Image (cartoon, rainbow, N blue to C red; front, side):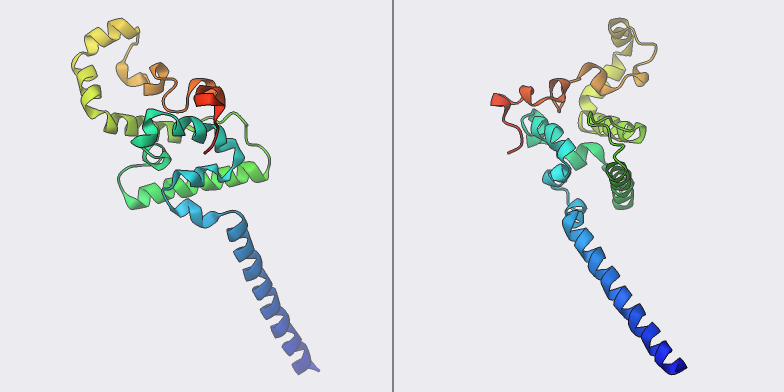
Amino acid sequence: MQRKSKKVLIYSSITAFVIAIGIFIYMINISKAISYLSSDPKSCINCHVMNTSYATWQNSSHAQRASCVECHLPRHGFLEKYLAKTRDGWNHSVAFTLNTYDQSIKISDDGAKRVQANCISCHAKLTETMRENDERYLKFSHDSSPSERKCWDCHREVPHGKVRSLTTTPNNLGVR
């Protein structure tokens, strides 16, 4: 009798394991999780709340020069890039699952630091000129320190458009 119950336990465990693997594979497929390993901007629109950001970026000058990943993730270091991508993905998944995601997308403090660093990295020549002329800049901007100001404080429409709406895209095109 004990031998039979041991067999049932083994078969039940194997069956449960196979079912769990099946559910895991199904969830990977349905969530398009593999797409998040790429740098393709279209992976950003797996979630409908990103459609507007994607559409306005797509119609901006940055679409020809910088992908979502190039602006929103660390540029240097494979590990840093994928850790940030994993952390952001986890936070998005939890927010969507628990329905706590704000429909008006707001960048996290960590994300803002990354975007600011990437703006400065791409526009190094321009930012260096600003640093060299910081006395004039301070008078113009009324800032106590130029380092406190974020690029998008002045460049609000770069690259996601005015009030992040599709009305900023030609003919209200939306996602192509």
